[in-house]
Amino acid sequence: MNTILRPVLELTVMISGLFLAYLPVQTYLKQPPGRLAAWLAPLLAGICLLEGGFCYFLNIPTSSVLFHGIDRKSVV
Image (cartoon, rainbow, N blue to C red; front, top):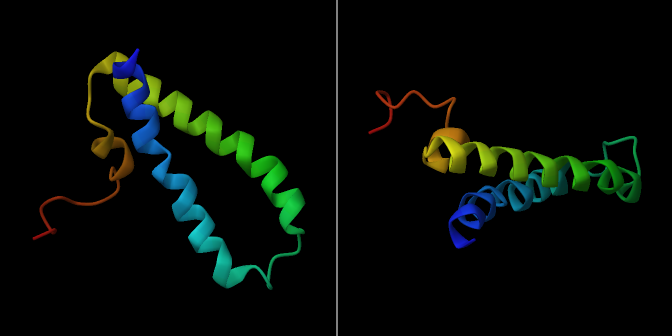
């Protein structure tokens, strides 16, 4: 049971990152925070569960899912 929860919990880092990205632009958004949270919370929970299950069943690290857009050759 712990082995399937680990990738899901590692991917929940995205939720706090999106919240921190929201804070500087909250005055520019046209949707109120409650309505934004009403559709973002289930979306983020679904993304974390699906990607966590994907990582668990394919036995790949979550870092490959989180950092898939970074060119590893350019990172020193």
